[in-house]
Image (cartoon, rainbow, N blue to C red):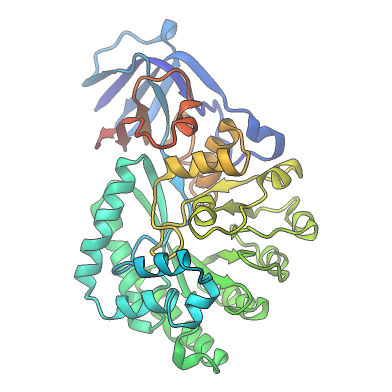
Length: 412
């Protein structure tokens, strides 16, 4: 099966050679070809270039992209897409002045979602979650990481991970699963942290490994949640089962969690709303990707990740949606990119790099996703006609996507 896209106004994120990520000043460079073509063969990118060099071949399908931009699908490396119900009441509580911490102390937040999830059948959770998955696919996401963490019981965590596995089997999008049993301490373990850690390590992890339900492991390393020492224990246990770490850290406070993540070779450190000079130094010359979640900052009115500070230090940065019911109830990566430009002062080039190639790196899939490169998956966004790709973040409230292609097939 061959598909030829012709007359592309501008083809974005063109990389002749496979790269794993871009860092520092390189993030401001987004290679493009104007008046381009792209050839897809059996779901893979097999050729691209200027229309002057477009091959004259018979193909199964031709798409005329006159006036339109083509770019790789978004790679959303941090979501909690599988959950039950929502937390709209907490949204109103915050409007009325309650903080995230105050809501949590009243039994809201993560514990509220865990209660709902454990009361909901696996089938119903799947049915709710597939609606969200189909929505983000239509919004241009072509790869997504989904975490557990709203079970906080052995069966609850397994239930979420099984739903994630079923979604991956039934939809044409690559899904990476992350085990986040260390999301919060259940009420019954409030004064017995070591008891809950023992449950995670000795009961949950062996079952998850046996069923091959997770690719990564995570913990909420934060004041009032999991300490640095507790997070290290989780990372060590994950490594024993072949699960590399992707850690929530520095959302509200800086407690030297980033240094611990580097020590355990975490793939990514996510949130980073609070970043110290020491954190920046620790991240330099490492394989760990900093990940910003700007729509979480937008929704709960906390500081934004200091993107300019991170990029100016020569570091890479990825963008993700943090899609979850409490602090970022949207997986719209178009709005994530726009928010990064508007509130974090990232250029459109930097934001697109952060949401494509660097997002792929933060999921461990940069060899196959995140750029227009021969041999990579043909996961693409075709926009509506537009003046330039700057319109993507500029017209933040408009749906500028005309077609979405996954594995070479038009699916939306």
